[in-house]
Length: 294
Ligand SMILES: [Zn+2]
Image (cartoon, rainbow, N blue to C red; front, side, top):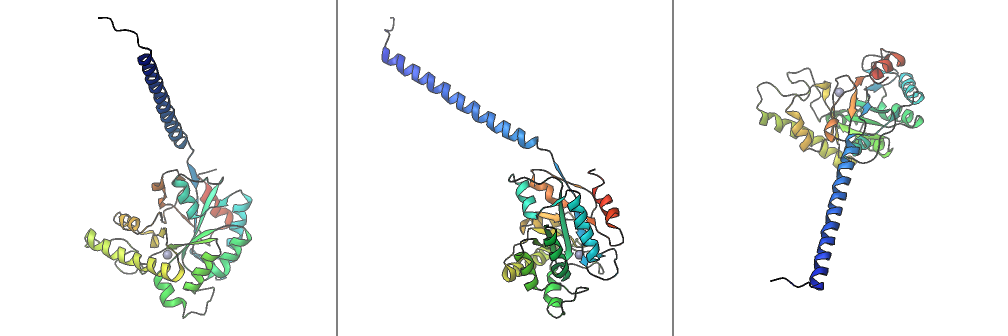
C-alpha cells in the first residue's frame, strides 16, 4: 500500500534534517577552532632565554662568584642598551601555561645564596634600570647568621625582614636554595642523593629540608617559593619528584647554555644558567651569554 503524503510528517522530517545539518556545522566549526588554536600554539616560535647567575655584589676584589657594584651596573646597562628585557619567574610560569606573551629578547637575572648586598646594592640598581630578578636564599643562613650580623655588604646574609623588603619592592622573587643542604664539603654534594640512600630515604630528607624553608618563608614573609636553585648545581634524578610535590615550578641548574621556552611548563625544569664571574669584563661575559642567539 502506498503511504499518503503527510504535510506534518514532511515538516518534522525537514526540521530534523535542518537540525542535523546545523549540529554538523557546529561540530565541524568547533573542531576547526580547536585544531586551528592548537596549530597556532604549536606554530608559536620557541623563545630563547639566557639566564644570568650572580652571587655576591660588593666592593671586595672581584672573584669567580663576586662582582663589584660597577660590574653589575655595566651588565644591566649593556642588557638595556642591547634591547634585552628582564622577565620574572611568574611571567615565565604564566607563559608556559598558555597566558601572556614574553618580550623580545627576554633574560632572567638570578642571585644565589641570599647575600644582604642583594638588598643594599642590587635592588637600587634594578630600580635604576627597571629590571627584576630572582634571589634564592638558604634558610639556615637567614636563621643562624643574618640577625647576628651587622648588615655588612661584604659578607652578611639577608634577614627575614630583608627578604620581605625585597619582595615588597615588586622587583624580586624569592627562590629556595634549600634550608640546610648548601654544602659540598661533606659526602653529600648539595642536595644530591648519597649512593647508599634508598630513594625513599633520600626523598624524606629532601622533603623535610625543602618543607622547612617553605614553612619559614610562608610564616615570616607570606611567600610560597616556586623557584628552586640546586646548590652547586648538584642534582640527581630523584630530586625532581620531591621538588614538584612541594610546589616548585622552575629549577635552576649551574649548567651553562641557552634555554628554549615554549608553551609547555616542563621546559622550566632544569634551566641553564651562566655564572657571572667577576673575573670577566661585561663584554666578555655577555659574549658568552648570548653567543647562541646572535
Ligand atoms: Zn649557592
